[in-house]
Amino acid sequence: MGADRSVKAEFDYVLGKARALLQLREIAEKRRPIENATNLLPPLPPPLNEFKAMIDKWATTVDDVLCEMVIVIAVTALEIYLEGVYQQKKGDWKKGKLENIGRLNQWSKELGLNLFGDVKEGSLREVFEIRHAIVHRGGRLDQKAVEGLKMGKLGQEVKEFLTEQRTQEMLAQISRLVESIERQI
View 1 (cartoon, rainbow, N blue to C red):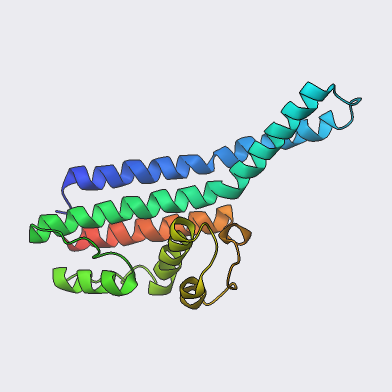
View 2: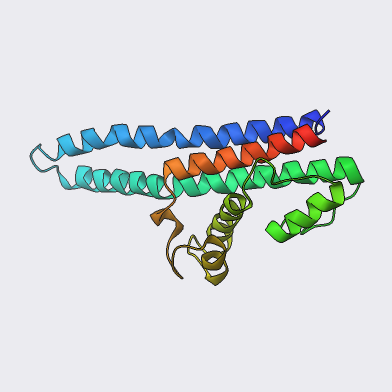
């Protein structure tokens, strides 16, 4: 059974693209040895120095925001998938049903689903709180996120603890949630 194939296929496609984005990190890592080697050369003329500085800044920016982008994309894909499942089962959709874990619990009860059989609620809460901080607070933790995450401090930047490994773990949680839902519908 499962969700309408197009809804699940869209989710799989978008999550695959999010995972592919993490591969950009490997490209940035491969750039670093070249950067270090250029430091051994005589000073570059000013236009090349400016260009090198621009490239270094871009690479640092990629490193800083890549995991954040992946989380936002993955949670958005999850929300779209869940909307599709709800519409398939109930025939309608009311905006705001997936704003937080409490609403997600209510949504799952309406559909008679057990969302947290294969997924720890705390892990999913972490994903939602981090996405909230990225999208609505410029990547900084607000009081709600600090309380929900039970870590970090007010104003701390998400990028300080959102590693590639942690991002991969969050993607795995999202995938397990979708697979759990697929088995129940």
